[in-house]
Image 1 (cartoon, one colour):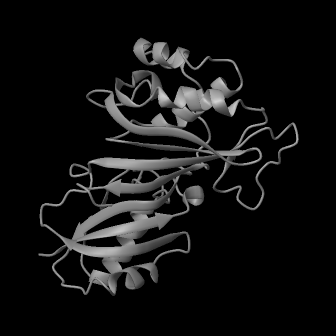
Image 2 (cartoon, helix red, strand yellow):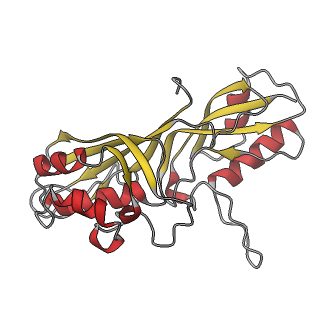
Length: 258
C-alpha cells in the first residue's frame, strides 16, 4: 500500500496544538492532526492514521510540518494537496505531497528541525504592540539589548543536556539535544527574530530559550550565565515559557532534504 508524505502549513492560533486530544468525558479538542486526519479520510474513503513530525504546542504555527499516512488507494500526488486543502478549514493547508517508502516515519527518520520566533520589543517605550501580525508575533514591553541576546543565543549551540529548558515533568527518556544554530537577528526597529535548529527539541524548549534570552536582553541574566544555567539542569534558573504566537515550525529535514 502506498505511503504519502505531506508538507503542511497552519495558523495554530485556534488549535490546541498538533496532537489529537480526545478526552473520554468531553468533546474532542480542535487539533491540527484531528482536522487533517478527517480530511485525509474523506479523500481516501477509508480509515487512516496521520502522524506528524512535531507535536507543536497550542497556539504555535507551522510553515513546514511533515505528516504521513498509508492508504490502500493510489492517488496522484500532484492532485492530493488541492484535494486535501479543499476539505480543510482555512487555517490549514497541504502544500506538497510525495510517495515515500513504506517504512517512512516522520518522527524517527527526522534528522533536524528548524523553528523561528518573531518578537516585538520596547512596546512600552515607543515600540508598538503587534496589530496586523499579532497572531504570529509575540511582544514584550521591555527594551532589549539585542547584542547581549545574540551573545547569549550562540551559547546554546552544540550538544547539551537541556533539562533546564523544558517542563519539569517532560516525560522524555533523556534531555540531551544538539543545537546546530541559535541566532538572534534584528528585523526592524523594535523587531527581532530567533532562528534555531537542531536534532530535536523538548517540550516548550524553544519558548523557554526565548524567555531566557528576553531576560538577557533586559539585563537580568548575563550572557555568560547561560553556560551555568545549562550545566545546572535546573528549570528554575531559566526564564519563563514565553508566549506561543511568535513561534513557527519552519522546516523538518530528512537526510539532506527538507
